[in-house]
Image (cartoon, rainbow, N blue to C red; front, side, top):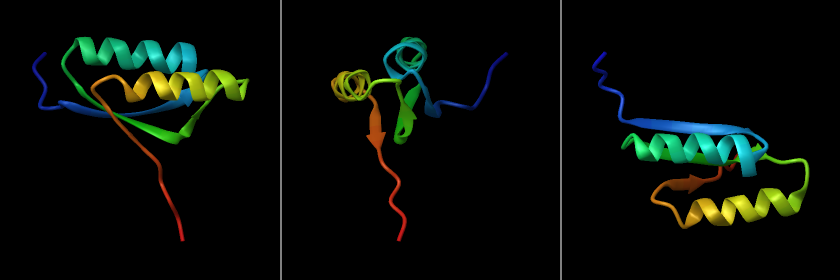
Length: 68
């Protein structure tokens, strides 16, 4: 099936496992990946921040939502 979708927004839990593997699979399939950092977490903050740092080194967009 051919689709016009070429960009995805990702959020989830267990950022260092589930989210990371999804991101890697999407990048391998040539999608533009936008990771919503505020909507990603892990059970430990160390895992969360380590994986966010890893994601910043990939070719994807990591951003935060700010509300006023």
